[in-house]
Structure formats: structure tokens, C-alpha cells
Amino acid sequence: MNLIMRLLALLTWLMWSSAVLPAGSSSVLADQTQPVRAGADQRVAASSTVAAKAPLRVAIASVAPFVMPQTAVPEGFSIDLWTEIARRMGVQFVWTKVATQAELLPSVKRGDADVAIAAITMTPEGERVVDFSLPYFDSGLQILVRTQNENSFMSAIHSTPWAAIGQLVAMTVVIVFILANLVWLLERRNDKAFQKPYWRAIGEGLWVTMLIIATGEHGERDKAGLWKRILVPAMWLIGVLLIAQLTATVTSSQTVARLASSIRGPNDLPGKSIATVPGSIAAEYLTRRDMKFTPVLTAKAARDLLMRGDVQAIVYDAPTLQYWAAQQGNDMFTVVGPIFRPEKYGIAIANGNAIRKSINETLLAMYVDGTYEQIYGKWFSSSK
Image (cartoon, rainbow, N blue to C red):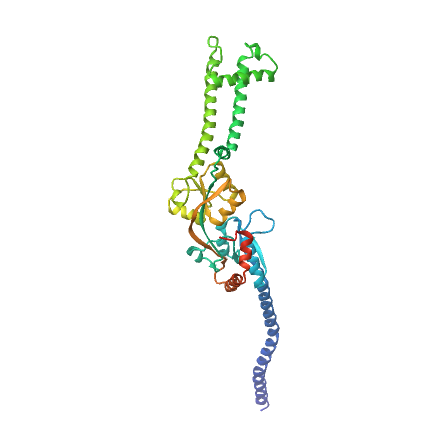
């Protein structure tokens, strides 16, 4: 009986333990878990706050006068426009510089930047990879050529490729000096005029060399040896080639200058030598019409090509060409023909970014209150 009572007591205790202990354990675990969850929630909230305060990354690329090149602090029409937009929206931002305009949209697509602004043409292809704001600038393509000065003499001076002539003259001096040394080596044993100190003898050699180039003769027809008979015509031929090269350099530059004057619009471009920026709307326009072009990456490179006569025209965005012409002066470059291939510039925004609506609302407000016109007037003439 006692044994049975003890067994019943043991069973009763075991049943009570199984019913009470788990509940207690769960309560303890719950009490331990609550601080962990609270800490996690605090960290998530903190990270959200940091993300909300993170400055926008704004990609820019040099294209005057929208983003001016070679400035310590970014300047330009698009720079001023975005700075005002960000101020009104109350957002912080940092500039992210990319090498060329063609890299702006990819930088936004990859997530390297949140926004991009410069002189970005809004296209269906671009809309597939980014979102665009409302357009903020009407543009198009135009043509830049060298100015045809009414004074024929000054026109000839401006179109002369002085750099190429300088290189040719330097090369000529070196060649003539080498030829003078050859003459000195051949004549120093037999001709008393060459039996002098080196530099005086080389002076005689230079004089003889110039005479040979000018007349094709040395003056000793009967006594000339084998090497002299070879050297004299060779020197004369070299002189002829140098003079021919000089003539070709000057005349080709003058010819290009005259041909450039015949460009009055896009219909005159076929058959002409053209420069533009690869990956641009201008490059696409020329490629679709099977017109080859010389690629340039900087404004200076393009202007140098045009100034030297290496190309006859530059095809690019009208505002940029007008700015170049104004900076160089109308006596150097002229923008010709009407604006063709109309295009609009917009701000590129990462796909799905809610900031697009705020940017559009801010742009519209700037149009209404006249702020846009003030910024425009700072960088462009009053009439577009």
C-alpha cells in the first residue's frame, strides 16, 4: 500500500513538473528575447535615419557652359540650376565627376550616382535605363566653321598652319646641318676652304649645301668623284622634297579654308571633314547618314583641329558651339546654319526614385517665379 501511495505521489509530481516548467521556461526566454528584438528595432531605425540623411550623389561631366571644364569648384548653367533645386528641396548632395558625357547615364544605372546633370539629351534609349525629369533646356545640333574674313590677307594669315610650318622648318634645319657635315667630310682634304676650325668649315658646308639645293650643281663637273656625284643629286632631291612638303602644307590648309566657306547648313556636310564627340547625339546623327567624323574628347582638341584646317566643321550641340564661338571671338569661328535635330535636356534620375516628383515640382516653381530665367540670363543671351 505504501508502495502504491509512493508511486502515485511520484506520478503526480512528474505531471505537475511537466505542466509548470515549460511555461516558466517560455516566460524566461520571452523576457530574454524582448531586449534583443528591441535592440534590433533600434538598429534598423538608426540605419533608416542615416540612409535618409545620406547626401545625394550627383554625376556631372564637363560640357561648357553647362558644366565648365577645369574649375576647382563646379560651375555652369546646370550646376547653378541643380544647386537651386537642391536648396529648395532641402537635400544635401555631393558632386561625382565622370570623364565624359557618355558615362553619365551608365553611372546612374549602375548605382554609382543617384542623379546626373550636365547637357543630357532625353532619348527613348535613355528612358529605358533611367528616369528623366521634365525638360529644362531646348537644344539641337548646329555647325561651327572657321570665320571667313573679308580681308583676304588676314584670312590667309589665320588659315596658315604655323605649327606645321614650324615643325617642317626645324626638320629642314637638322637635315641641312647633316648634309653640310657630309660636304665637309668630302671636301676637307682637297679644298682649302674646308681646312678651317670645325664651325667655320661647317659654315662653308652650309653655304655649299644651300647652293646645291638651289641650283642642283656643285661647281666641279670635271673633277667630281664618285661620292660627290652621288651626294649632289641626292641633296638636290632632298631640297625639292622639302620645298614640295612646305608648299603642300600651306596650300592644303588654304584649300580647306575655302571649302569651309561653302558650309551653310546640314545639307552641305556630305563630303566634308567633320569632328564631333563620340557617343553624342551629333555622332549618332552623322553615323546614320554615313558621314565619317574625327572623334574628339575635349573642346580644345576640336578647336585646334578646326584652326589647323584638319577638319572643315564641328557638329555638336548648338549651345556649346555658340559658347565656343563667343569665347574665341567672331573673327575666329562662326556658327552657321539653323538648329537641326531638335533635342531637350533633362536631369537623369535612378529608376523608381521618388525624388523625381519633387524635382519636377521644384523646376515648375522656378519657371513660375522667374528663377529659371535669372539663371539662364547669367549664362546665355537674353534671346535664345
